[in-house]
Image 1: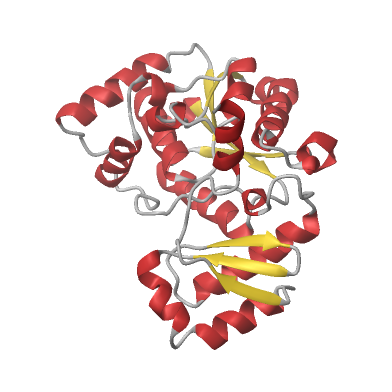
Image 2 (image 1 turned 90 degrees about the horizontal axis):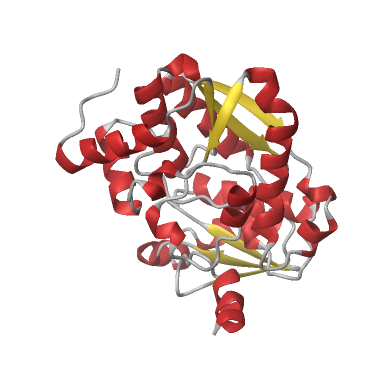
Length: 281
């Protein structure tokens, strides 16, 4: 079911395969995003679908649309999905929403997998989809949790950057190949503003409404009663034009009073990078 990869991508896939050698089953911490989907595909290609399990962490920070999309990718690959319900929202350090929030989230996921899921499903090794570009970023505290739990990062160790990962996703025909990055819903809440299920639900509802209006990507940043919309810069004229009233109504229906648009468009790490830069500068 897997097409042949060419040249450097085939060599990269071979390097990933060598890093995934495990006597039992491999668990892949799976979100349905491009990175974890490529890792899942390459693992199934190397080990066989029966020796790979996609482990999907489920909590209020995962949008229902993302959960469904993850299952579709795994079904396409013929890999079983095991859902692990995490309770990071019970952790004061996670709710406090400091720049290390992702550490507490990933640590909760990896702890729950290690404590029960691995034994139940015969998982002898766990991998996640960090790529070579992620390693260079200072705003990825989740990688510290992965190291703490001995989680493999084969894409990064094989030297695959974001461009290579996208290229392989396209070559393998993955349905998420062109999918925009989709960080968890909590990333829309400014640091040191508490993460709550109510805020996460507001964000999810507003973002779903904007996607239904036709925007290809979006972030709804939660500033109390104010929603700050980020969309691709080339789609800003749509927001300012014919879709303005419908977008305004949709976001207000999600529970916001004031709606603004960020003229810089979508920015990865918009809340975390400035704080990390100050701390490490």
